[in-house]
Image (cartoon, rainbow, N blue to C red; front, side):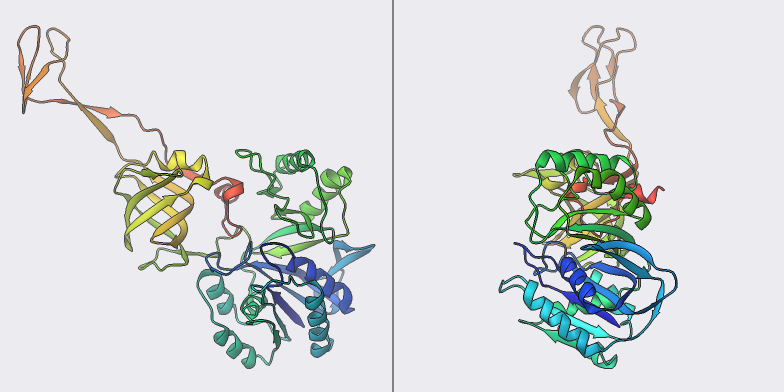
Length: 426
């Protein structure tokens, strides 16, 4: 059986990943594969912190299991394959009970739960991660697959829960998440020390933002999450936790490794013919204006690409990334990655493929006196010393403050789904 769950938290607390670990623990069933943390379209207006939904496959495991976490005093084992066993309605009843116990009491929290014996079509995930899906679309698919489902409030969580079940795992990373319910207070200096140590290993991504000094692996709000470390190898994450984090003695009730779609660029639509609000794109084209800045430190520039004229935006939270952006000039050829909202592409990263050659116009140098001629009118320059006349100005190539290359926004400003360029180099 596959269970999907979404929208049990709020911007002020709660954690759906923690809730899923409790359902796994109480189900009495084996975990098949990894629990799945699936990020969806980050442009959805009503999404919570990271727009994440969860799913897991439960049943009777077969093969040699791997330990991928600990729930209380017991190891959490993941089986490579298994048989579909168990009562769907019983699992649904347990999930409903857990949601009622752990959901956030917030009018904007609208949980959805799905239980099915078949994985839902990958097309649902692909639409949910890059576009918008209606509840009616989802319910039609659930009926086709004879899935059981429950909604609370307006039922919006049903969309994410179903999309998490449908994720085809074409690209994936992992996140090891540690919990202490309801939450644990951690000294800022301890967070910084651990984050820097973890980032230095090279096994993780987005653990520490050196530019801002932010410890990205620790949540900013009060949730059951103690920390989350992200990487491409779940074994490396387990080893890293044991060697670098456990010695620090953080309060921990449980931890679990999730398979995720984080840092995959799954939300990006490449080479679009048209662009729509609330979608994310990779657009190649020429810069057609000098960048300009508005109060607040937000920079903009125009580019011309396949969809036509597009306004690019590098907002203040991208910090030093703006230094690259503001040095763009007309004629630079780039690929811009970001979400199109409010009429502009909000940059998540930028590849500068080539830079234009710029020249500065200046008065000619007198060949006799080696002094600059004076401008006496259009196409008329005269040496102030000997009076020699010159008809043409000189053009001098200007050095550029930016080079072709790939430029990421800082870790602290990066969206969960965005794949930093440095992961592509390995």
